[in-house]
Figure 1 (cartoon, rainbow, N blue to C red):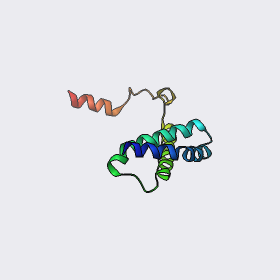
Figure 2: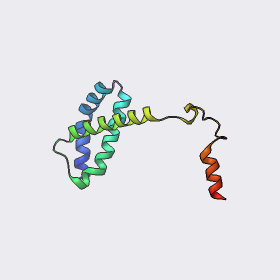
Figure 3: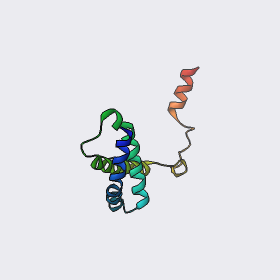
Figure 4: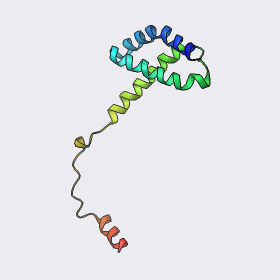
Length: 102
C-alpha cells in the first residue's frame, strides 16, 4: 500500500502544485499545502483505502488546509496587541466574591 501511495504522490505532485500555485500565487504556500495534503493522505488512505481520484483529493485537501491556516492566522491576536484592561479596583463582582470566600 505504501508504494501505491508514493506512486500517487509522484504522479499528482506537478498538477497539484501547479493548481495550488495558481490559487495562492505562491510556490512556497503551494508546497506547504501539498505537504500537508500528503501527511493527511498518509494518515487516512491506509485505513480508508485510496480515494476514487487521488489527485483531486490531494488538491482539495491542500486547498482546505491552507484556507484553514489563513483563517486561523487572521483570528490570532497577540497579547501585546490586546487593548489595555481598565483598572478593576471598583469591580462589584470582585467585592462580592471576597465576601463569599470569607
